[in-house]
Length: 340
Ligand SMILES: Cc1cc2nc3c(=O)[nH]c(=O)nc-3n(C[C@H](O)[C@H](O)[C@H](O)COP(=O)(O)OP(=O)(O)OC[C@H]3O[C@@H](n4cnc5c(N)ncnc54)[C@H](O)[C@@H]3O)c2cc1C
Image 1 (tube, rainbow, N blue to C red):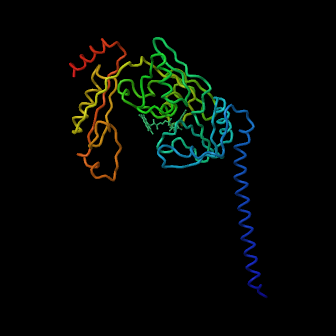
Image 2: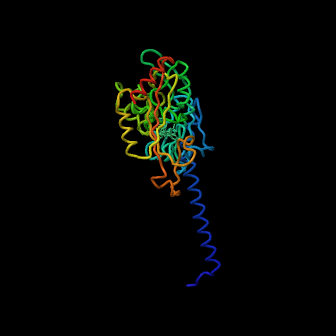
């Protein structure tokens, strides 16, 4: 048999490669176009109060930890609860084969990518401002807020009525839904419990796009599942938070220890004793100059001084809150100092 000339073989191989290359390219385009339009077209057809962002999605692919970067396919900026309901219903109806995940994002202060949805939809909760915050005064005061509200705004609104939430985080630029999905811990937790212990009701949109009100009496499983549930039981769209009288003044005391056992003994005593302080917290700090101003510090694992125990101190930070007049304040301080 006559063998074909070499240049003819080269041509055939080249043509085959070209065909393979082009077919795989077309397949990729079709796949991505199909998936994109599956996702975007129904959303674009609805009259949403908010909108979808498909292009500028970079910031939702990061969080405070900056360790994992997974861009979502889209960001939903909801301006009403029905925006969230429609989206979740649609994703649910697409079924598991769509592999589409949805994550609520509060202020994005997670450290491990918890608020990310790789290739999915990130719901930016801070856009959800369809209802005003509402304070209920009376014997058992509380405030109704959006799940995307920052705690700093909750504080400002409550203070207008001389009230404040019972339990806090130290840092207040976190959202209500974000910390209620974790725990929300600070120096009042020893007395009132974390923030998840100081919530009366939640409004939640579940993965099927259904809206439930829940509390310890109504849909209690969902209520307790969502509190500290890392967003796995639905999206918290509204919460009713317990309030108390806001302190007018605070006495702030910091005690330094170089011995860890004495520190823990004192902490246990302070936490378990009746009627001591309103706020107790402990920190590890670096034993260096400027201690008084540098009351919190972070550690550099490369620094040998910091790694040694003599390089560190521990501190208990304690506060007494006063909601009373200056006269009773002085009596209170005297009482406290004699007791201690
Ligand atoms: C500088 C800094 C200071 C901090 N200080 C404290 C502190 O003092 N005390 C403390 O306890 N923690 C503290 N944290 C941790 C912080 O509370 C958590 O990381 C919290 O989840 C961040 O809230 P976020 O609004 O940024 O939520 P995100 O990081 O955006 O989300 C956190 C998780 O909650 C889910 N989620 C967000 N919103 C909702 C919603 N509406 N419904 C359902 N799920 C939702 C997300 O999907 C994600 O799983 C701090 C973090 C940082 C970076």
